[in-house]
Length: 390
Image 1 (cartoon, rainbow, N blue to C red):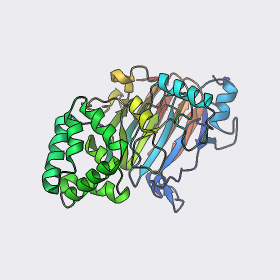
Image 2 (image 1 turned 60 degrees about the horizontal axis):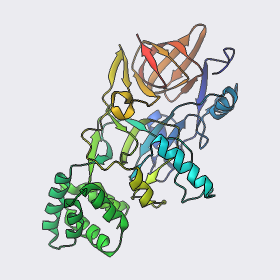
Image 3 (image 1 turned 90 degrees about the horizontal axis):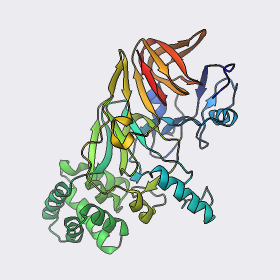
């Protein structure tokens, strides 16, 4: 941990990532700051070497990666503001054991870390949760029951007037239908191309299948268009959340959210992307069972404090982070280094004789465990390893 002589509260910041799927001035629009005039997809607040947060004053460390190197500690999470104006790739993330083994294997095979076909950029897992910052956040998340998928395939096949969807339906209806139907699509080929084309044609003009049309406009001919029909299409209101453990297939479609995840860049993609798709490795990490409900319901930690805690799910029992949403005065005991950002209103953090103002768009690194008093109102998000409030 950081030496007690170092500041408790360290203002930090970063530049938005300009991925093509970001919304024009997206991060700026969420935070009320001046935009770049281009797509703004993500703001990273953490120590990840891909884009470590910088200290505003340039001291006592230049970045949080320097804090990690100097302190010998590892920040067990990465906090992001994410704003999507277009669909992200279909993807899944590995378990800790899969990440460690995959990273070691690719290193042994001499695949450069920067190689476009590299799957494992680090030896860590990337479980994640996202909380919608505005109504209408859309995502694909988890497989639907096979019977529901088949009902939609049959309805679209009837509209299409062709038998191009029959091979896919046969895979879905057979043993281990989710895996078989998914594998058939990602294997590609002429039959898959015909099935996707028939699916898109049949969906045209039918509001129930509007998403298929939208995905086809963004990624024409991509098998991921059909994969989307196999997944839950979820729309979140502001404050609602999804929990995405290892092995869960998902894709964010549009909207703004605050995202908390393991500090990893390990992504196995499965379509709706021009980037590398390793079908075999993706299938190895995927969980091919229908998911019941991937919502993460917050718990009331104290007055004015809600906690988004993955460990309330069996798949999140060992996850070393949680996200707190603070809307007013509160007292919070932070058991480890934490990061706070205000997306609305203005707050002040204090502990002992140290204070930090956190107006809208500002973010602060809390460098060590502390009992923090929060004053103000609006929406303050605190990413932390563990906490209690009261």
